[in-house]
Length: 119
Image (cartoon, rainbow, N blue to C red; front, side, top):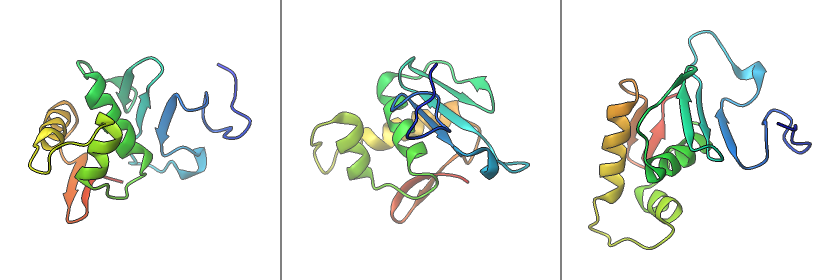
């Protein structure tokens, strides 16, 4: 793939979200979670995550894009579902539960502000 001149640390524009992105940020013991929206794949530590639905992949991509900062469930719903969900909808919590089952323990954390990827 061609290098993106605006973001040389990324392999292609928009299609790949890497956390952490810069090689200088990688430290021993720091996990690497890669979400490739172009090919609808995700890897954790170089190992493919099987069985992710498109919606789970979008939720994971948005969480990874936040680089460890929390994202509110309502914001996740608006971005991943691209529509307004009912306030009492459990769609986001169900998607997070399914992602947690497919990722190593404590990768997705719940905070007062929402959900975040563990640094």
